[in-house]
Length: 215
Ligand SMILES: O=C(CO)[C@@H](O)[C@H](O)COP(=O)(O)O
Ligand SMILES: [Fe+2]
Image (cartoon, rainbow, N blue to C red):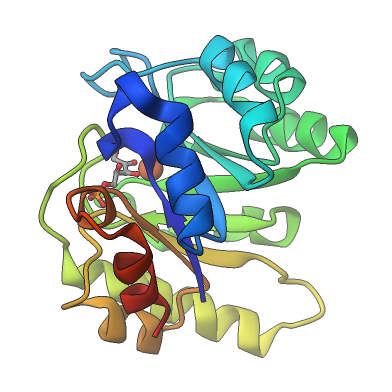
């Protein structure tokens, strides 16, 4: 299982150093939470910040777009070095178009769903995507409480993929409230990639925090 620290809980005044520290601490991916103050009430950063971070690390850039109509900024995120772009199912009417554009660019495409969106809603997209991101908190902030009932979505996604390996190749990622107390349950449900923000960045030893999620 891969661990993708979310820089949302990092010290933004020292972002480059923080990323080097989690890279040296064994992070597999870097999770970048982009918020627009519209799809979610919070605001973070956009393509210029990601562009500055790109030469600083060789980590895989897992960009989680919590923005309305992501199609308008898609090319910018591709241009600044995103490796995987995850858009929210609830944020656009143009999912098929977005999937096409990202696939043509050679980058990976993920779809995310909020806690209240049933998993069946996106079933018809699963054969076209590289990753499905199950939100285990309401998107918008780090440091919220994990919603264990979201693991039912993970179990369904795993069963669908196991039963249809020719058509389904997606990774299952979970995001929100992950820590050393729920990680075993999360792993057992079938998650391939865990995002963790506050659990890692609130600790002084990032390596130990990342290792505790890997085990
Ligand atoms: O997308 C989001 C929040 O909307 C996340 O990626 C959070 O940043 C995860 O933070 P923790 O819940 O692990 O503190
Ligand atoms: Fe996220």
